[in-house]
Image (cartoon, rainbow over all chains, first blue to last red; front, side, top):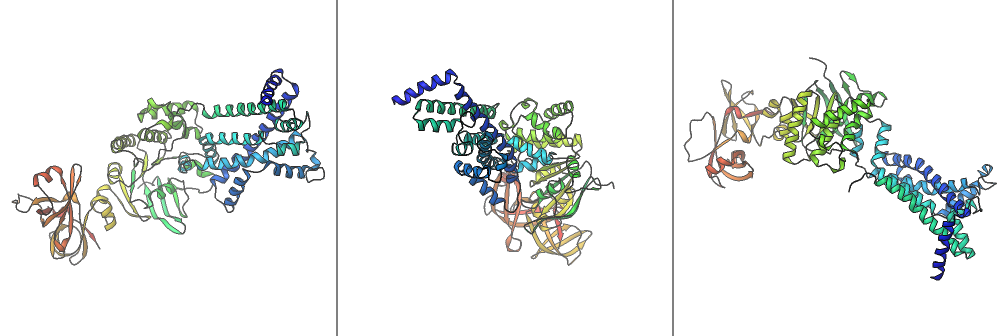
Length: 232
Length: 366
């Protein structure tokens, strides 16, 4: 218990002192995971809407794959992204391995199925007759999709939160494709692993607290947007 | 006759190879209200979706003002935007009432000033101006359906499509909204197709009535023609004829036909040849009951059937009485006001006489 208490005190001191290294790690975590979440929303929401609203052969298989992907183990993603980005790999010429971009790619692969799967569920829980009604009021195809998205905005924001939560907290992929290089690809989770390994529990606790605070802040913002103007 | 505003020709819709809609011809004239009635699953809503350009038919075509609707092309949207649809469920978006009514105008990219003006007008005319800022989710069923109607009227559509808009409302609300809709449609003279399974709604709103059964139009005509002179047994049953007896015309004198039903003679007005098999249709409200022992007053009714009360069901202000008229005729159903029911002291087994005029009998030729 003494250890945890000491760690907490040290952590608060570290955070309050504005340690540049800690700040840099925090900022990078936020940037990388926000970018990955943003990209996964751009790809996942349209994909989820198509899968929810259309019927075509193989659709069931695709939905099952997406649902499976929602639980994709980060280390598996890390492994395959590493193989692709490896110097001699198919995308090695891009020289992305051990860069923040590589982490964004890996985190995008983790978040996209989460966003897609939750979008499918969000759109399918809308009243199916609403589509007919909106068409009956003169909506074009594009307007229809936009309106359905607006109707499903609460669960879609939940999808964004789940996607962000999935990537800000993962460590395996970031470690493998980022390499945990100090000042370049070290993020909160990989730094926590490292500091714990070194026995620097105070720093590890500080980083953990920052991670929790960051996740809370982002989710609080999204929840505020989601619940804005709603009466019980 | 002018070109109908909306026509369907040779329309067919198939679900899993099953023909659920088969309408060779349907026309709606500008400004008229066509009420489509029929039992559940008759294909009324399917017809409405096809005519409202929300579902392409497997074959056939829809014409608006004589011009063929271009299914599957970019031109479809422009045509569809001249329609507005209201469904049984109000299906409002999760936004304020005001924003919901503005939605179809915004979809058509009308200028903001016009949108605001139309929204104000229609909220007021539907009596929901005070709800403008309320969230659509917080409305009662009646309020929500008013918002849904305001949303459709605000477009000033060429054709308004209503699919059982009052079916989910309680009777007083339904009555109120029906009255309001009637008034608005009369003032605006918007061409309307109104789908309902409720005979009373169809009678109150319809300029013409189309009876749909099993995906086909069985009869299309004025309310008096469809309700008074149904052309098939199914239509007769649906429009409220409760007693249908098979007989044969045995005599004719000065337009007055004698029909024999299992040996009982019934006099009827109608057009059928002697010897022709017919169905005798009796509406329950056209039959008068008196007790057998009571002296017949001066009555012009030509038909008198004796029987005994078999069953009486209270329907609020009326009783639906089933009279057993012997093995030859079976049960005949009559409606009696609660007042006369009590005055007559009817109960199970009471011997009674049913009387009705020859003009109350409708014959269907077989």
